[in-house]
Image (cartoon, rainbow, N blue to C red; front, side, top):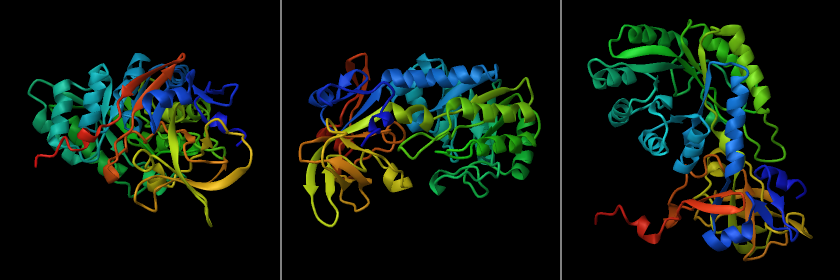
Length: 419
């Protein structure tokens, strides 16, 4: 397990007794206060990452803006950190918009996405005066024109399919031909002309996004060239998609290298006076968090199964995308007698596997097990399968821990029942 610590939030350490320390807080103390499973966010690591993206983009393209892709971790406290660090927020639905506003975002710094926006979501966007609506199709235009009141205009971008197929899981590809998101250039051109003639909409520019968990820089640059062929506009939203480090095998580009490629392509293809927006999501939050579980069962056989008190209820990434995670017994990351095991969850599905094949030191019932790099898409896709109660989120910083999302109660599970 040598090197496992490097996958935890920057600044994480091991105490003299081997106990994991995140954000200055010991894992055993966190569990004593908040129980298990618990999702722990190193707040300073999160803030530092936000500043890194903002600073490194600004020095490469002055007229630019970082907008956090909230869908990666749409917790109000996380959104508030981004707002406090000067970022805008990208939202992909009404709920994310409302938590963004609760987090204190300036509405003009919000970007609304979605391939099937509802009338209600369009109305919320217009009511609150959000900055940009990304038009995915002509139906979006119909709804906006029917909703924006006389005397007002709504700034919009048109989402383009660049025809770029990145090397990532098929379920998180979005820029390839056949994507459900956006329009191919030939279909986008007449819609752009229509928007330019609208009395209620103002055509501001183009949006492009090639996918998620992309570990190469070339697809980002290719997408810039594709949208540039549609003409010159005031704004180009170049999306997100930069990969994060989940395992020792992952080697995502550094933020600076990613931006060198992206902005290099922008300098070559886009107007010098245009505003550039980027939307980091997974790469912004993934490595800032870890989930701590308690081992409930160890079952030896052809395969040794180590079962914990969570699973696909708090981490669907394995079942949905086949995402690989690593794990370690807290207090024994480099302990004796490592055994190759499969870590599974408590849910009634054979696919409820957290880590298939990992070396753990003498796993026993009652041990704490930590899984790093759970800051992206775990909270947002958490669910109540098997009557599971969704887990709490805790911010740790400077030796202090604070609860930002409480654990669900049994009463919460039936709160929406009407009979």
